[in-house]
View 1 (cartoon, rainbow, N blue to C red):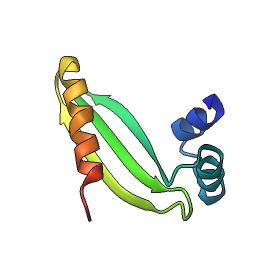
View 2 (view 1 turned 135 degrees about the vertical axis):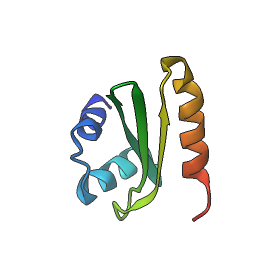
View 3 (view 1 turned 90 degrees about the vertical axis):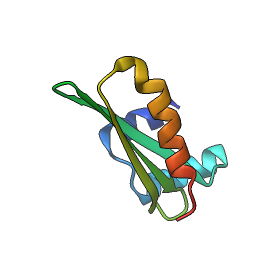
View 4 (view 1 turned 60 degrees about the vertical axis):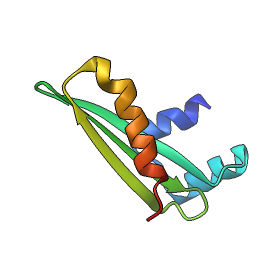
Amino acid sequence: MLDEQELGLTGALDEQTTAKIGKLYEVEAIVTGTVSKFGNTISLVAKLIDTKTAKVMATADVKTTSVDAIPGAIDELARDLAKEP
């Protein structure tokens, strides 16, 4: 599991890797994301990736200036990723 998390952090999730993760954990999609801080702005970005095709199914991003607002921002990211295209 930690190896897959490390791959997500490096951005090395290619078609073969996502398919392997999907088969191993029996999931149809995985979510990867980043958290960055620029000045006072905290940016959270998430991608929903199909484990069979490695195609990005959805993306979402939220910005905040408060660390305390991050849990709510994560909820917002999840809602955005779950929306039908």
